[in-house]
Image (cartoon, rainbow, N blue to C red; front, side, top):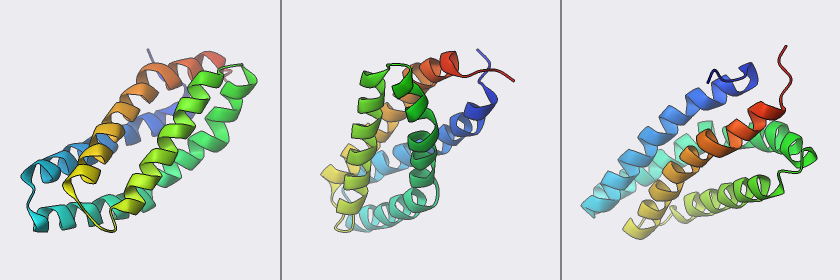
Length: 129
């Protein structure tokens, strides 16, 4: 299915998020302190530059549309996962394997959720034009 124009950039950004999740998972699995520290810094930088702005676009544009359409469960899950990802990134100021692994796992699952459920529901509610 072709994405609505308003969702195309967000959907493209998911590729970078999946790459970040994969790299974080590998660093977490290595258990090497230097890899953990390097990847934790990369996660924090990428989150601030790309992921958090991506989340804000969703929170200010897509979620109000879905709330108005009665999609409360999708909206709540999105908000909860965004909050948890933000919390995990903040916790990475003191990097450890478990936190980095949880971040990687949740980010990958969140991208899949958005692509398969959230964006599909949003697309159904968006006027084409």
